[in-house]
Image (cartoon, rainbow, N blue to C red; front, side, top):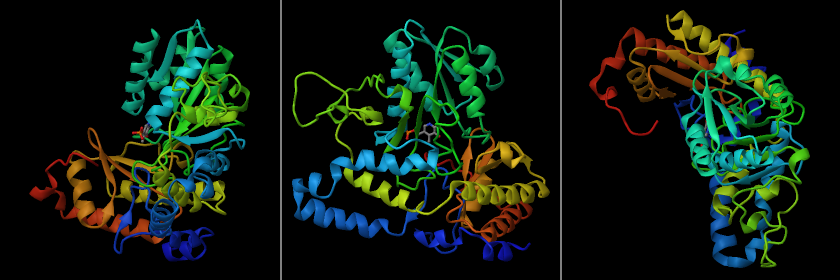
Length: 401
Ligand SMILES: *Cc1c(COP(=O)(O)O)cnc(C)c1O
């Protein structure tokens, strides 16, 4: 089928108008910062003008601000295969990793080993390093292929990303959770590149804890608050080390002692960033009526068409070539990857560069069309054939993206 025919038959085509995509831009970076939900500007303006401006502090109750962390958690839950009440929105992914890994570590005392994959997104290891220094735990970073053999009776907690940020390779959540459980270790799954991208099944796959990002595929806006998941079986015992008043059973009773609330909501620490929460709410609304299995299927078609086109241009894959083994992204090697990505961006195809020689392209199924993939390949072909990347302005490294 032609891209136009595929778009005409696309059951998710209706979702594109839920976003504002600039004219001429093919946005292949929704895995890093999701596109702007079309309803967000008006909703945020209303929240600022009316809820904050007119109603002031009354809005904590009147506008439901105080419940947003739980309410948004319950909207994320079905996207990641979690029971209602087992997800809460709070803080950043990094902070939530600290809370979940610390809680898991404490639950498995006297074990003191935190096991993680060496090549994973560096911030996760930085956070675990800090946690280890604080608690006297030992952080063991091992190669991806050695994770299973490193799972011993010493391990308290295994931290893994579900979809690798660079290669896009998917870790087998069910198998690795079972392997951890078999040696008495708990798992923390980082869903940064899988929430809103894959049909994640946290409960069914036996995850213990999970964390993830609000601003990537969930479209919550720059620096959107993140989420954390606590499996129902751990909710009564999960000890959040950042035991602030928003995780208290009665935050406004101002009691002397800390008494955690029920469910994953105890994973909160302090006052939620309400405007950012409202933006995230608009991001989550873009998933209304979306079946994640259908969304994942479309994303696999998009990314596979792009990968096959790129391989035909002579590029080398840095990702699994089987779409079933890969998240909704494609990564490719190029000795001048940075400049090629910059030349593409100048031509309206937005992807990103990752050290040392990787071009990364994300395929958000709610707003990308099959025709966009075909057009992106055309522009990529021109950048390569005409060697447009040689232009001096594409060689200068910018600090971000
Ligand atoms: C994006 C991402 C993060 C981001 O963490 P922040 O606290 O939002 O900066 C963390 N871990 C992984 C694996 C990511 O992909």
